[in-house]
Length: 68
Image 1 (tube, helix red, strand yellow):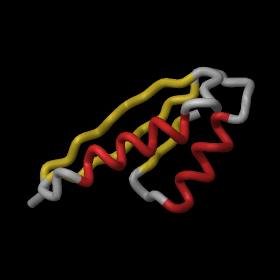
Image 2 (tube, rainbow, N blue to C red):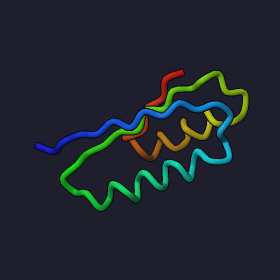
Image 3 (spheres, one colour):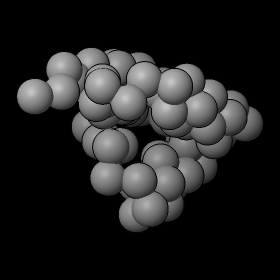
């Protein structure tokens, strides 16, 4: 059974860095085949497109979760 790590990240108006953050996490965990992971984003009342970008990324990456 694989161990699972949950990465919890709050965000507020981070549309400029959301995709890079997700990309870096995905690249980092590809090195560890024996560990599963999930990214749980918590929206801290963003007023930019951060929420939309996370929802879009979630369509192709089921490891991404979003709490608004």
